[in-house]
Image (cartoon, rainbow, N blue to C red; front, side, top):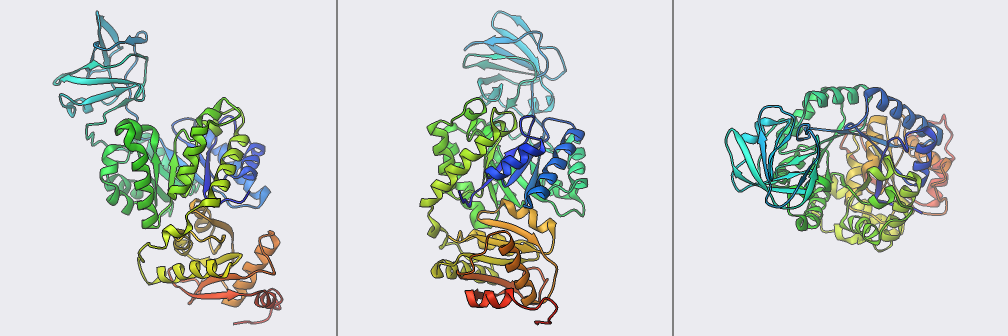
Amino acid sequence: MDKRTKILATLGPASNSVEMIEGLIKAGANMFRLNFSHGTHEYHSDTLKNIRTAMDNLNVTIAVLQDISGPKVRIGEVKEPFELFRGDQITFLKNEIIGYKEGDKRYVVSTNYPELLDKVKEGEYIYLYDGTIRAKVIETGDEVKALIENHGVLSSKKGINFPNTVIDIDVITKKDERDIAWGVKHKVDYFAISFVQNKKDMEHARELLGDYKGKLIAKIEKFDAVENIDEIMEASDGIMVARGDLGIEVPYYEVPTIQKRLIKKANEACKPVITATQMLLSMTENERATRAEISDVANAVLDGTDVVMLSEESAVGIDPINVVNTMSNIIAKTEEIYPFDKHEKLSYHDEFDVIQGTATKLADDLGAKGIIALTSSGLSAMKISRYRPKTPIYIFTHSRRVLNPLCANWGVVAVSKIKEAGASKMIQTMLKSLDDRGYLDRNGTYVATIGYPVGMPGSTNTIKILTPAEMDYYLNLPSKKKVD
């Protein structure tokens, strides 16, 4: 089934072989996520090699996203798991200890980020075990004491969240720096930065890329990131609505409206947005998704997300190909009622927006079979995608580094790179490439956009309607004849 919303599948032990990756691509995966919270550099190098082998075998373009783990705050080791009840007291110490039961209803633990204890204020909340245990701070100082407000079992190294506290720590750790250097060396397309708080975090990440033109995705999973979303968006190449930690950092009932607001902002800014976490989680262990999960995916599509993401479902699930196929079917069916016209009211950013907006409207009005665009920087493709045309968007570039990341943009088919030449020659090359891949309907009409002078980024200034007769003319041009 054809779809416009993209799928980002996390690879893991259940899905990182060449055979499985090819199966995921055939089922509808457009991007693959390497989760650097787990695995060694050697492990991820092997997985990346398998992705690129699968791409070559299938002659398709796929984007690779490296998810940088960031500073995960955790408690230290404990002698044995604590079964905590409402009214129990837990004390956080700054020095590293093995956690223990101090007495009746009193427990003591440490944390891997002791400096955060200086930032907590009385009355604020601390969430333990990824949000399942809630504690209210009653005393601060050299020790932080909190009262447990619900039942739960706490064991070693479980996560801590501070939903009311601006923690203001460097979100890029020494491990992250080494991981980013690996990504630069291996030329991944996207770097997803975890626990972003403000634009400075993204600027720091950009510095670590050096001269490499990789794309940065800001993971929005903290309450202060939501508050600072405009400056973060400006400093990023895209965002991810990371609903796991976000659902702990903000009241749970605000997550759906925050998701919709962030997607709208990304659409307006002409930047891709990924909706992530627990989209089809039950399929990690089950053959079928729940009705609520199916509706969740559908609503993200209707919100205007560019990408929906799979995590455990595709990394360690019982049938990753079935999961991707299920998500593809949900997307395709939902897009039958997609509100394509809702983006017509977007404001133009510059004069080139007028060209791309006009091209998309023209294609829809003509009932064109597709929009064909040549882009040097990728910006033209992103602008066309922003207007959500009903027609497929077939994109060509002069560089693989520009082409691959476009897999994250709604409706874009990143076809191939082509050599620079005269405009007519490049139109011929693009049409032949589409024809060879079975994308071209020789009896249909297409809208093409191209820039003069050729090869200059941001110069798209020409719209050309390609009728069947004109396509026949270009396809039959003598290959050695000078046509410009």
